[in-house]
Length: 162
Image 1: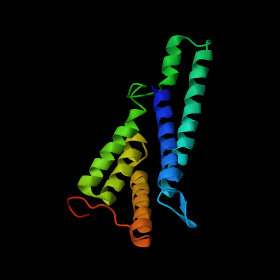
Image 2: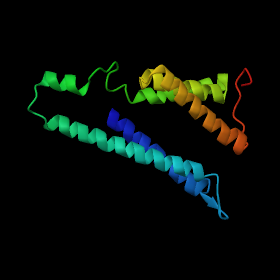
Image 3: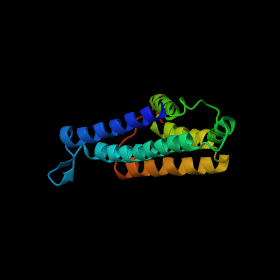
Image 4: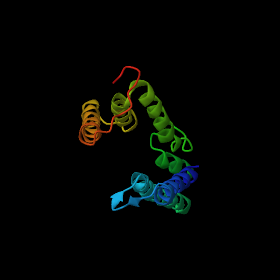
C-alpha cells in the first residue's frame, strides 16, 4: 500500500508539471506564467515522493534479505512504537491535509495555517510544546508577511473574518 501511495503521489506531481507547462503556460513573454508554481510544486512533489519510493523499496529489500533475525524480532524492529497499522500511515497526511482545507474554509487561512502546523509538529512530530508554538508562529508570520503584505495577495477569510 505504501508503494502505491508513493507512486500515485509521484504521478500526481507529474500531472501538475504537465498541466503547468502545456495548459497554463510556464513562461509567458519573459515572465512566469500561471503554470510556474504548479511546475515548481510538481517537480518538488516528484523529487520527494521519488526519494520516499526508493527508501521504501530499499527497506522492503533489506527486510526480505535479513534472515539472521527471527520473525518476531523483525516485527518489533520495523515498528518501534507505531500506533497505526503500516497501510494507514501514508494516508494520515492526506486526511490531515483535507481537514486543514476544511479548517481554512471555516476559520480562515491564517488561523488554519497556524493550527495545521502546530498540531502536526506537536502531535505527529512529537516536538515539544514551546518549540512547536515558536515554529508555527514563525511559519505563519513569514507566509503572512510575504503573501499579504509584500505581494498583496489576500488570504481567504473564515466565518469570523480572520
